[in-house]
Image 1 (cartoon, rainbow, N blue to C red):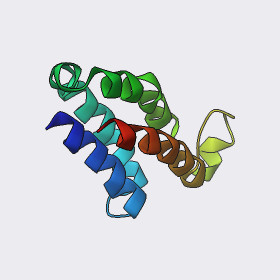
Image 2 (tube, rainbow, N blue to C red; image 1 turned 135 degrees about the horizontal axis):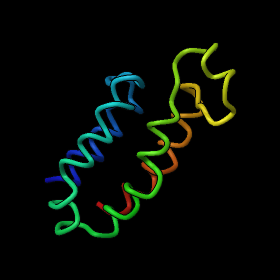
Image 3 (cartoon, helix red, strand yellow; image 1 turned 120 degrees about the horizontal axis):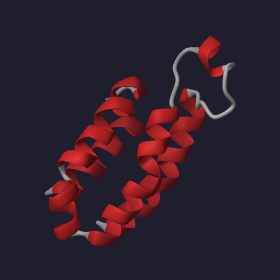
Image 4 (cartoon, rainbow, N blue to C red; image 1 turned 90 degrees about the horizontal axis):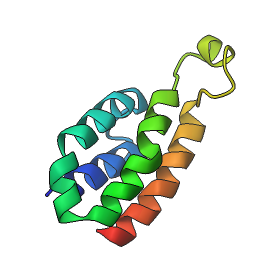
Length: 94
């Protein structure tokens, strides 16, 4: 169930039914809330999602002026590219 929920959130973002801003806040919270269940259900998926997704979500910045202050910030296009790469791997593990 945890795997379906988390990978489903990624799909919703990539399909455009969940905004980048909401996803960048909601996904890390859901990942934290589902951590124990996901560890028991699918450890490889848990490892994959916890490796980079929290960082990618924290680096998403919708404000162009704010992104200019740090090269680490991601615009929506780059954010979506990174989530897509993780999603492709995650889909193989579910």
